[in-house]
Length: 104
Image (cartoon, rainbow, N blue to C red; front, side):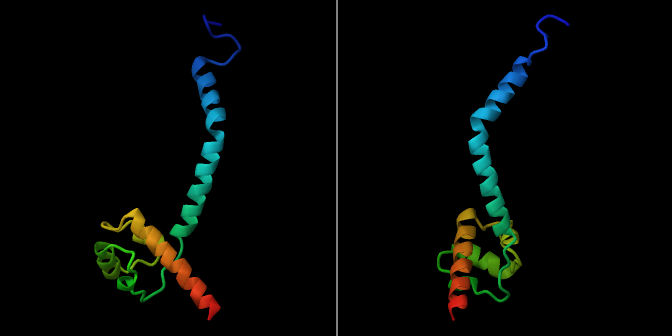
């Protein structure tokens, strides 16, 4: 073998392994959050929803969402002028709305 290349790990591989071990918990949590968000992105938005009734949405978001009429939360999140806070507000509104409907 050439100099410094015995049977052990190279420096880069050793560092990569150390980083993996160090951040494993963080990475697992992030993956869990990504999965949660992904499932929310597939959530359908009821046809004919009145975005202007969702007072927690910014006015720009209400107008864009009303005009574009996205079918899913994922589509809504990709509309220019609709920010992550607006998506959170929309998700909360949808959750609360579903709970109200189930009680009736």
